[in-house]
Image (cartoon, rainbow, N blue to C red; front, top):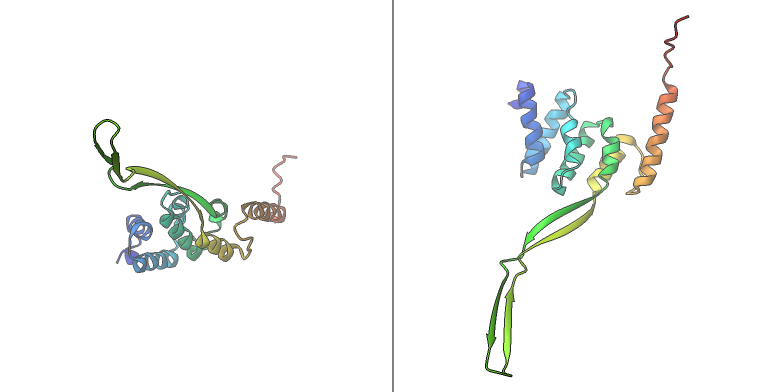
Length: 170
C-alpha cells in the first residue's frame, strides 16, 4: 500500500523498514518498490546506513544501493568495503567467591564472567563489493586504494568529456 501512495512519508517508511526490519523478505520487497518508484535522493538514507556501527545495516544499505544503481554511492561504498565495528558483550556478572582456612592453610577463588567487554570487529563486506561491481562494472576486490585510483580516473575522464562553459564577456 505504501508503494502505491508514493508520498514522501510513505517512501520514508519503506526506507526505514528496509534498513530495520528483521524479515529479509520485507527488506527485499521494500527495496524493490523503492527501485520501481525511484524518487529523488532515495539512496541518501542507504548511503548514510553504510556508516552504521551495526554491520547488518551496512550490508543491507549496500544491497539496496546495488538494486537502486545509485552512482552517487560509489565513494561511500568504497569507504565501506572494510569496516570496523565495536560491540559491547555481556559475559555475565563478574563475581568472585573465596574460601580460606587458617594460617598457612589452603584457599580457593571462584570467578564467574568478566562483566562487560568490548569487542572490535573488522569486516570485509562482500555485499558492498558486489554493489560496487554492479554499479561500476569494475572489480578491484577489497583494495580501497585501487578503487580510489580508478574512481579518480573515472571522474577526470567524465570531467574532460563535459563541454566547458565559456562565461567570459567580450
